[in-house]
Length: 318
Image (cartoon, rainbow, N blue to C red; front, side):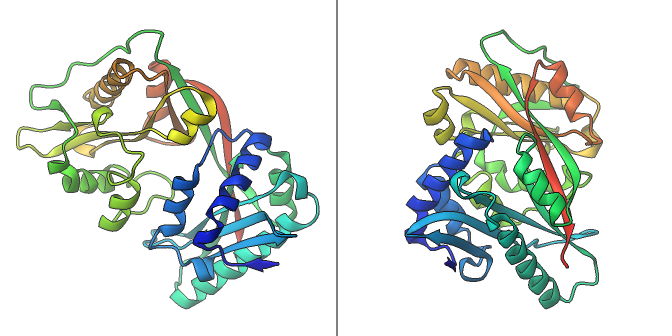
């Protein structure tokens, strides 16, 4: 039986994700509060754009389709989906792909968007089942990502001196809106980026329970405008599962006019030092291997090493 996900399904969906992570080793853990936040997102229509597959009263698979708010070149529909390891190789994955394609195609038609559409699937690179499903259903790899970690017990990261017209300060909510605008400018050259509006920023950035203000920082210019920023998170479900506290470098952005002056290194060194001081065991992040901003080199130079690889697959809506 397939039916939309509801708030009452949060415990079942949380348990399904735990089983999936245990088998696939995604490194992504979720507790009931995390799942509740996802289903409470006002930008996802649970009735139309989520589904769960039930067998004998047990949730064995699920899928979600996210509608892009703003589009630059291609209407890319991101998804979240998984099948219980005990129920794989029985056609459920293909069934979910068909459902996601149908929903994305309908949304694309409703928008009457002239730009082409794509459906995206993402997962850890070691998931051979996902790779086979992607190939069988007409998808191909379009992006590769590194999951990287930095052991905070190994010492400080080399810092960079900032120009006299820039100063690093702890994150302050008084600069929250300015940081959102700086983020929307800084990430314009990142693949599949769409600007964050006030609602998305509040729910998934600085208003999210995972956000750690004390680890985050800003670089301001002489007019107190945000020139660069680093937003850090901590996921309590990860700590509960691994026994280690991880500082997640969620977003590190530099406005174009201030690139090449050491801002990124200064922010990164500050956050890692603060995380170490607050008793965190490691820092972690995910980076686009084909990014053009030099982020991968920055993280490698700072001592981050690759511990996982992820792949995004793209497929047509038809």
